[in-house]
Length: 266
Image 1 (cartoon, rainbow, N blue to C red):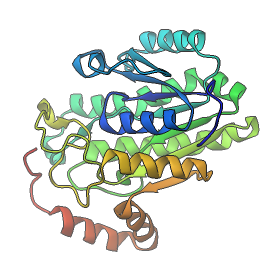
Image 2 (tube, rainbow, N blue to C red):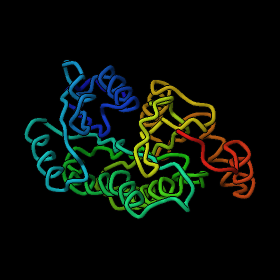
Image 3 (cartoon, rainbow, N blue to C red):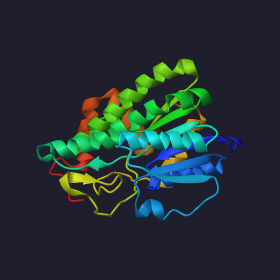
Image 4 (tube, rainbow, N blue to C red):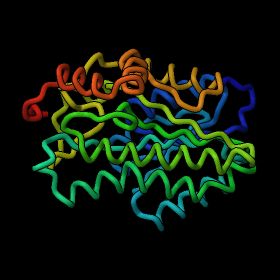
């Protein structure tokens, strides 16, 4: 994604988290201006003022607030060239314990916030011939133990953006999907909320964790190479191949690695 035009702007949701900040650093180093969006709060407020970066607080599940936010960015920036749909939460636990409220909350944040924002910015990216980048997961193309709601939301996210890719291609707009495996953004932090909802990257039952910087570097390299699907990390690449060749083998390996018993405490 290297470019020398400082007028190009990337929006990153979930911008106060580890992967969001790593993507921000990589893009600004490549000459982009960035707009980081996250929930108002201490994490967002603690971000230092940096040249070329705008920081904005918004609950993206509030459609009216998200619409107002998009209008403000449109007014503030010369163009919107890349939107990274990175905001997300996970849900960890047995399906028997999944409440309807938790299930809907996962979809509200992981799916609807991203897809409604994509709809709001369709015209902007068409004018810029820009790129939608959805941050999915290995759970977006395969099963993942103790993550029924999370995997469902990421499968839905991928279905939306893969279909959007077909619609937007005639307008010169790219749609890419990045699928990281386990990224250690909040590892060891047990701020798992009630009802099994947790911060991304906080699970302790993952395999072969990547750092946010490593994941961001692979994502940006994939974008630069024009890839439409970017498996991020060794586990993601192997999972992509194995799940396509033998879904049964993938399930066996996944259960063997993560464990077939009850979900571990986070």
